[in-house]
Amino acid sequence: MSGLLDIVQPGIATTVQDSGRVGHRHHGMPLSGWLDGPLAQAANALLGNPLDHAVLELRGMGTVLRVKAGPVRVALTGRISATCLRTDGGRSTLPAWHSATLQEGDRLHLGSADSGSAYLAVAGGLLVPPQLGSRSSYWRAGLPGVLGRALRPGDELPCGAWTLTDPREWRCRTPWTAGDGPVRVLLGPQHDHFSVETIAQLLSQDWEATAAQDRMGLRLLGEPLRHIHAAAADIVSDGVAPGAIQVPASGQPMVLLADGQTVGGYPKIATVISADLPRLAHLRPGTRVRFESVNLETAHRALLSERDRWQRWLTTLETYLPPGTVDETALYGANLISGVLHATP
Amino acid sequence: MKTAPRLLALGDSAWTLEFGNAIDPAINARVMGLADQLALARGTEALLSSVTDVVPTFRSLTVHYNPVEANAAVLGERLLVLARQACPATQPGRLWHLPVCFDADFAPDLPGLAEAKGLSPGDAIERLLDARFRVYMLGFQPGFPYMGGVPSELQMPRLPVPRQKVPAQSVAVAGAMCSVYPWESPGGWHLVGRTPVVLFDLRYADHPAMLGAGDEVRWYAVDRQTHDALAAEIAQGLPRETFLKALHG
Image (cartoon, rainbow over all chains, first blue to last red):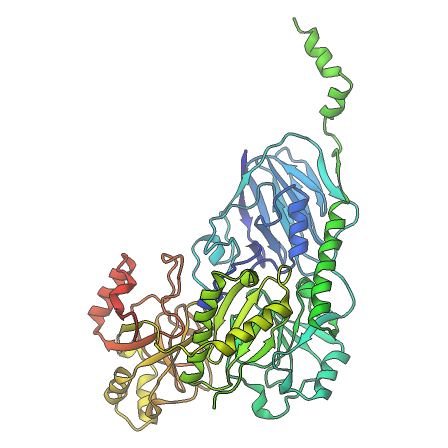
């Protein structure tokens, strides 16, 4: 069966995302894609989806979805919950880290993403038409359909085919969370535009995330970082990547995120390593963050270690029978149903 | 003397091969030479299979790679060897002749720019039409070309206060650079005309951006009627190749 969701209320900062639009950066097209990959993939894992299926990224609040064709099985990950309003007037809470099966007509009111980013996956994945090989929203490139603009009431989100063979749902007892401690960076590529003292200052102070943030980037507040001389505040534009920490003349760093441009004209004092990029999705205004400098080898080990940690988390998933479900498996197991069948003439 | 290329880590998922720090056709030709060399090598070298995106800029080539698959240090060393060996691209890319309409509402900054440079608007237009522009890179927005070649007598810094809304397809100049805004967006360049040509078009799925780094562009003037007719034809599917004058400039 293939479900269909439609948007009752788009809410704020809710977008369709997958792993990103690889291979188009030489056209000036940003990578895009989910800001916290492991958290998004955890939502897919709770539904038995391939991990690269497109999901909804929730960075704000107020989104309301309706099941136009069902059933649709969903799972939320992150610090968020939702309320499900059933057609019969029933109301239930859908907590994160639990799959749930919604019926036609059910409405899902999504709460706010308390840590900054959360994800909603659907069984079979969101099948909005891909653009340039990806189902990631990017609003600045005139992509047709829902990927090229904010969601609107009435937008339809088709879901991939899946089969409901088992009334049991999935959950995990220990939510996946990104690591803590300092956010690790590799210095450069333009750390030579700063003195040794300024680099030490980058690494020794607490930086405060500001409200000046979106999927393109995140401005940090702290003691300004000075360039070695005024002219060193500009460079002839070169390539940038998500995680690059640009320092404009103001000295207040801007960390680029997934929708960041492909080239930039500010010196990059350091670049956040891949293992710690997901943590940038959770720096709500006022959150404090520190940076630690590592080398390439440590960065690689950290990435592999995060992947191992995620794989171990995956083994903690378990099935459970939601309250009120008829446990057909148990009935079959106890031979009750077949007994009834055999009794039929 | 040519400076040796530098290998710079852009985090643990990209290397930047830098040939200089100026906007200079000779430096950009080295960038494009490496891009060509790398495109060839990617077809045959397993070591390069982790490469995902290759992004030329004015003065460097950024090579994005999958940090899980790649041995980053070995990849970086190989890229540096390629950068040392690569010859500058000897030929520019494709040569395009693109239409531009200079009607007053399309070119709100043209009179001011001309006046500031002591020229009549007609003289300013003539100088733009005489110039040959080189696409150094794409960026800022998908399909937005950074084209060097604005004659020195037309060069002006960016507007002191950027516009909140620059109309899509606006032809604009700032300093030595000329470009076209593919989308309506904020922008601080001087608007000197409008082109009916669509610079980023998803109907060309393999190459949505019309121009590529290394291409050359010359402008030709069209009146409003021709502009509107071309815009309609392009919407109907008039192929891009209509504006292609040569595969090599």
